[in-house]
Length: 200
Ligand SMILES: [Zn+2]
Image (cartoon, rainbow, N blue to C red; front, top):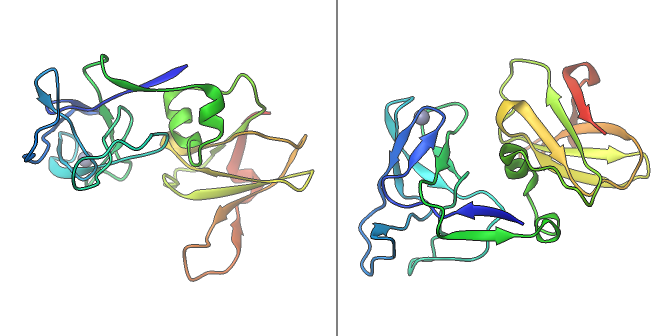
């Protein structure tokens, strides 16, 4: 089982520190006397000395406020002026969301958080790559093609690492940046020299 604690007012950021300050709530939702934090709530970032907003990252289950905003969990992002968003850091472990490995592997977009949390699947094959350059890859979606023709999706996280889960083939033949959401058609191949394989 894996856990993600809920974020509350006055929780901080990692690295660098900061302070989460949820907007006033009409019907306050509190954990142990402190306001729960929802996506879009303000966070002060000590690193760039500016206010950012919280951004949820998978995995999570629906847990929303009356406006439909999703509750923030430990490891969610602070979108501020920092080129790599710092992570929300929970100070309170009593209220959390729990995920089995089986549940995680069935959820989309979880590999980036798992990589951050240092979790590697025990029950399924996985591969990870790290870009060898100083370029900023954070948040870029990435597609790996395996030798059995299967296509895996991941996204670059901290340290320019990308992890792919539920691997079925024996070897990865291609890693591409997913450009589908831009005006460019198709994928852009990353030269293999730029990518260092972490494990197989
Ligand atoms: Zn910042």
